[in-house]
Length: 590
View 1 (cartoon, helix red, strand yellow):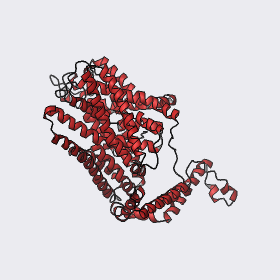
View 2 (view 1 turned 60 degrees about the horizontal axis):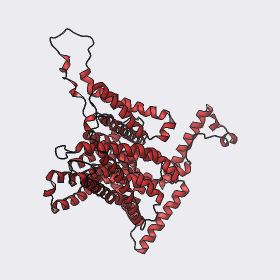
View 3 (view 1 turned 60 degrees about the vertical axis):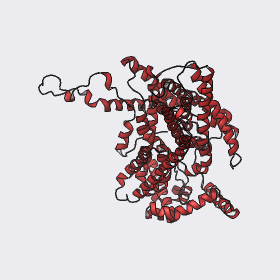
View 4 (view 1 turned 120 degrees about the horizontal axis):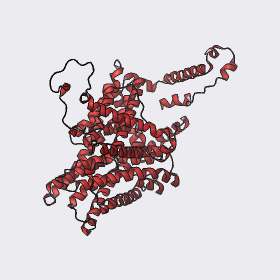
């Protein structure tokens, strides 16, 4: 992601700045008294040194500055960033900075805490992904995504946990204080593909849109499965294996549907609320971006408060509100939302990977078991590949566009783990899970292996396999017209044959949206602008005017516009790169 600064709601920036430090190093010594009063009162001092007064925000600002400068430094050399993923570079930088802090203080003063990650760092990244999600592509592949996210995650968690337990029973791992439920708990948190890591690596690889949306969609939606499995096995560990009953297992299965569907419903409700609010902001344009960020974040917090899937809530909030919000808010507000959201997401992503490296230098969290670490790496790779192949074999019997062997290789290799797994493993209670440090150490190794090694090699792998890459261009008007025509034809065929497929459902939803939802959630002027062909003429004139002004700046004068000579008009060089005005304007109506 590439974030840029844009004027926007300052609270959003401050929220992102809370991200890095989790637990600030207050334990270095006795805190100073407020106001710097020590001993007897002194006379008036012109200048005083009040470090304790600004310590926390100052350290946060310094970390943000270091991370931003690192991003600039990485991109000064295109050769480096074209080979090494930015996420891997940030982890290495974190390791270096963490080592320096450890050498200076002899204690790991900074770390990435679960609270900071889940409440301040993860929401802007997921909101950015949901708000700019290509809805048609996402919902067109929703069945495939759900199969990989639900069945695939359960398969990976169960097979990894059971296989590790089987090896443990053989005695290969030595003497460890771990039971079957502990292994299943570890399998549940290490199995999920991480959305932050997938976004960081796959956006640099530029694989085709279908492959990207399947892997990224899986990483987003498997959060519900991960949270449910994690909570279920953690509660089972607390109860004890001998006290777990069949009723508890049934409750765990029911909780999956409650957590996932409940989180999705909360996100949709807040999306409609956000769309309705922005319908009435015509006279207060300056605060429009604030509503987008506040209500989206409230959807996340509300789901977290209700023990539902917060990631699903904020994802579907962004997905469902984008159409109506973009139509309701002004162009300036839309630009502010776009760049502020990108900036917050990019900043959060940078901090996450850097602090994953910093957190790893703490010597107190490390416990090494070679067999456990290596077998975990082996099992998560092998079982993901087996799961992808089996599920794709089933899916290809029903998909119109088949997933080829090459796509399956990339999907298997793209199962990256990240900060979600780290945050979950840190949350474990050491009194209940005796080998917590072993789980933490192994999780860090798995994250570093997948992000650094697989991140380094996935681009050469994609090039060697000649995977179809995404086209960095907008579809032409002719392509859009034919696409819409085929949509109507396929919808009619499904309707006539009595089948209910993607095209039939999409057509029915479009009609429902046009007749009811748009009239409720969209401003009246925005509804009219979608239907007036006069708007096309206005857009054409506006784009032509911009082109003439750009040409006038190049020539140093706009006199050529008033010139009666047709030669001057014919030879106007619209040198500014822009898409066809006719296609762009008419496409607006489509």
